[in-house]
Structures are given as structure tokens and as C-alpha cells.
Image (cartoon, rainbow, N blue to C red; front, side, top):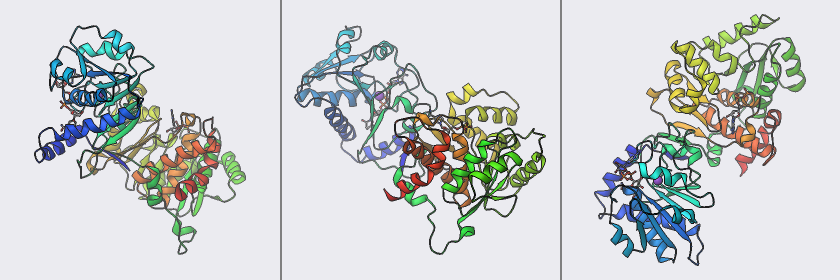
Length: 485
Ligand SMILES: NC(=O)C1=CN([C@@H]2O[C@H](COP(=O)(O)OP(=O)(O)OC[C@H]3O[C@@H](n4cnc5c(N)ncnc54)[C@H](O)[C@@H]3O)[C@@H](O)[C@H]2O)[C@@H](O)CC1
Ligand SMILES: Nc1ncnc2c1ncn2[C@@H]1O[C@H](COP(=O)(O)OP(=O)(O)O)[C@@H](O)[C@H]1O
Ligand SMILES: [K+]
């Protein structure tokens, strides 16, 4: 599991550790780790051009100390200073250490254009959103051929990871210290981070992190693997209320994925046309209402439909939501959510569905664009309004419990962009529903389901396009792959 702590919590922990260590020791460790990463990206023979974007704080000092080490390897190291004093040293002392500091207003364009490696030490966890004025033009002029290493985080991006800046740095690699921070894992900023390397500086953080990411090794700990004591009922029965006379494919995708994830049994509640398709595609399914351990309500469900069988199907959907059983609510089922319900609940909207849900629940308009600009805050608002865990789908999928539970947000990024295809969400609802039926919490079911869903998309056709049905069919192999790796 990758864990991230907020900038403030990292600062507090650093202050405690620093009071026990010789002055400058933490920065020495940080600069050494940073230099080692940069060294590994540069020719051992020396002679490369390294350009440091040196900000006013300790982030700039980390970058300058690392550059001084690279200068000892024979690289040509130049630092750009803007209209601010450096946190440590001045141009004379850095020059003695082998780093040429270009004073504010100096000719920075030529050295930057020739950079092989750019070390972005403009702002770290002390940064406010936006860049220092002089640095805006530097960042804009970073040559595409240079390898950009950001110190701690890509400067100009929000350390809390809530909103993305298009003018901030987009790094090839980010070297952070002690632990990841929310900026590294959350959807608004993750794309600016590039490859993430965490350097151990002897700082431990404890307590619940702010953000977590399951990795492949977590699957074996969390996945419900049956034992010889199990039977089909003890493994969990999932009820699926999905599809209708218009949307007939969604239940096939959802149910295929659910049985593929290893359910004890699946009950399907539909109208005539999708029922016939589910009968043909999933002979394992049992039809009609009955005892279940969890429900999936909503893929392909149109609550306004007057078609034959719709009223009876809707009655089952409503009674599932009125029960105290775990329920995953997706797509059309979200129109049935009016506030908190009794049982564990996982809502699985995409950004458009979340904007509609918030607009209805709050009585004032929230646009899809607003959700996309700050996914975490909006998912959090929906979680707080409904008492449910909210899984917000996207290239990075967030799983957000209500604030007062005091739990970390999960953020998963396991899928190729090829997964952005119709029906993929129906597959996800089946996987997560199966996990709810086997007793996992909405937080674990949502994040583990998103991970396996992404891996199945990758394995279905590595490097190429995938269709949702292939992702659904690939779930059993993806689970086996992750359990036996
Ligand atoms: N605190 C520690 O013990 C350690 C800190 N380390 C480094 O120190 C960094 C944090 O250092 P600082 O607290 O000095 O903070 P930063 O270096 O992130 O920046 C703070 C400085 O930038 C200015 N500033 C912030 N946002 C600005 C903006 N948008 N436009 C213009 N100026 C802006 C502030 O006024 C302040 O002068 C970490 O990210 C990490 O790189 C590491 O050396 C490891 C140890
Ligand atoms: N750019 C992307 N990269 C990876 N996965 C994505 C991307 N965009 C969307 N996804 C995933 O694809 C799925 C799409 O679901 P959804 O929008 O509900 O589609 P549908 O309603 O057609 O089933 C979600 O699991 C989402 O996380
Ligand atoms: K930085």
C-alpha cells in the first residue's frame, strides 16, 4: 500500500525529528537521495548540462545541494535565481561548490535551452498554488528534450492535490522525501508528477494517512479466497437489479464480471429482454428476487421506463435500497438516492453522474466541469450528504468515505486509458458488487474492484484497445494473476 500524508502532517513530523538531529541533517539526506536519482539519469562520464530552477525556500536549497554533488561528477551545473534571496548560501558560495548561479535578470534562456536535466526546486510543500513570477517564463521554456526531475513535488501544483495548474511544472520524475503527499496520488495533480520516487530520510509518519493506494501485493491480503469450509451461500450471493428494455447490455456486462470475480451465486432481477440475454450469456445466474448478501442497483436502469416488467423491477430496486444490506448504486440507480440509507453503501458515479447527483441533492447546479476540476471535494460532498462511500470513476478512480469516518481516501490508477469505453463502468459494478457480497467494506470493495478492473483491462490486450466485454471475461484471469504473482 502506498500511503500519503498532508504537507502539514509531514512538516509536524519533520519538526519533531529535526529537533533530535544535527542542524541540516535532514536536508543533507534529502539532497543525497535526490542527487543519486539524478545521477542515475545522467551519463556517468559527466559533461551533461544540469539546470536548477532554484526557488526561495528549502526546496530550492535541496536542488542546489544535489546539483553541487552532480558538479563533482563533472556535470555543468547552472542555477536560475529569480527576484528572491536563496534560502541557503549566495551566488559566491554556490559557485565555490561548483554551481553557477545566474542572478535575477541574467540571460537564462540559452543555458535552459541546452539543458539535459532540469531540477525543479522552485516550490515544495511550502508552496502556495501558482508559481513565483520570474519562474513562469522558465517553466514555459523548459525544452521538451530535457529530463525534468521535480524536487518533492512538481512546482506550481497544489500540494494537497485538489486542483491542477496547467502552468505548473509537468515532471518526468518526482523525487519526494519520507512519504508520498496527496499531490502525488490524487487525480487533479497526479499527471504532473511522472514517475514517483520516495527517498527514505529516516522520518516515520503514523496514524491514518490522508490518501492510500492499494498495490498488487495488497490483493492477496484483501481478496476473498474460499476455503474448504465454504459453500455457495457462505461465499456470498449478489442480487443485481440492472438493465431494461432499452439498455439490455449493461446487465450482461455487470453479471459476467460479478460471476467472474468469484461469487457464490448471482440473482438477477430484470425486464424480459435483458433477462433473456442474461439467461443466454450467464447460465449460472438465478432469476428473480431472493435472499442475498448484497445488491447492485442501477447499471442500465431507467427509472422512468414504463415498459413491461419495469414497475416490478423498480420495486425490487427500492426495497434493496430500503434494506440494511450492502448496496452498490450505479448509473440510473443513482436517481433513487435521496440521502443516507441504513446499510453499507457504495455509490459509483462518473463525473457527469456525480454532478447530477449533487445538483439534485443540494438544489443548486454543480457542473461536470466543476467535478473534473476538483474531483476530491465533490466526491467528499456526496459522501457527506449520503453517508455513503463514493467511488468517482476516471483515469484515476477515487474512493471517498464520509469525512467523519476519519479514514484515508483511496486513489487507484491501474487502468490503461483504453478502458475509457462504454460499458466499462458496468463491469466495475459487477466486480465491486461481488466483493461487497463476500463481506468487504465499500472502501475495500471499491478500491480493490477498481484495481482488478484496471489490471483486467491491461491483461485483455496489453498496449492495445479493449472492449468492455473482454474486460469482464478477463476478470477471473486478472484475479488469478494477482493472487499468484
Ligand atoms: N523541512 C524539512 O526538514 C525538510 C524539507 N525539505 C525540503 O523543503 C521543502 C519545503 O521547504 P519550505 O518550507 O522552505 O518551502 P518551499 O521551498 O516549498 O517554498 C517556500 C518559499 O516559497 C515562497 N512561496 C510559496 N509559494 C509561492 C508562490 N506561489 N509564489 C511565490 N513564492 C512562493 C514562500 O513565501 C517561501 O519563501 C520541501 O518540499 C523539501 O523540498 C527537505 O530538505 C527535507 C527536510
Ligand atoms: N482515461 C482513462 N484511463 C483509464 N480508465 C478510465 C479512463 N476514463 C475512464 N476510465 C474508467 O473506465 C470506466 C468507465 O465507466 P463509465 O463512465 O461508468 O462507463 P459506462 O457507463 O459506459 O459503463 C471507469 O471504470 C473509469 O474509471
Ligand atoms: K519542486
